[in-house]
Image 1 (cartoon, rainbow, N blue to C red):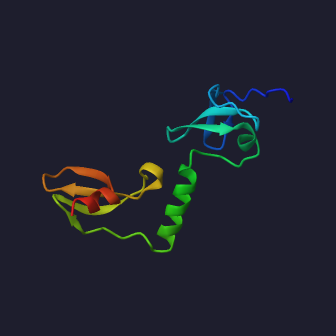
Image 2 (cartoon, one colour):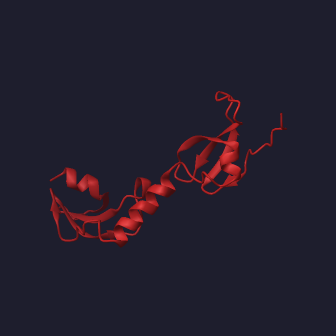
Length: 124
């Protein structure tokens, strides 16, 4: 049996290793509790961290998919559309959870808010 390499505190892509996962014991290797840059916690196998197979909680892959959809024109342009009391006035450069597109909206009361597209579409 090989000696355990302590990965505590090390970074692998977007993941920072917090501690060894003592609840997940297998014959196929050690697992580590990691915190992703997005805030999610995930248990990851040691070899998957070290060889670069896993670099995030899954958010990186989702962001890449969303970006590709945008580049191909598969994401609706909501500028000028109205959703309840909100009118979309622009696209927010910041992304929402898991890379979701966010829109800058102005409320009839004058307030400016940033809202994910799927939340706006629910309000129709």
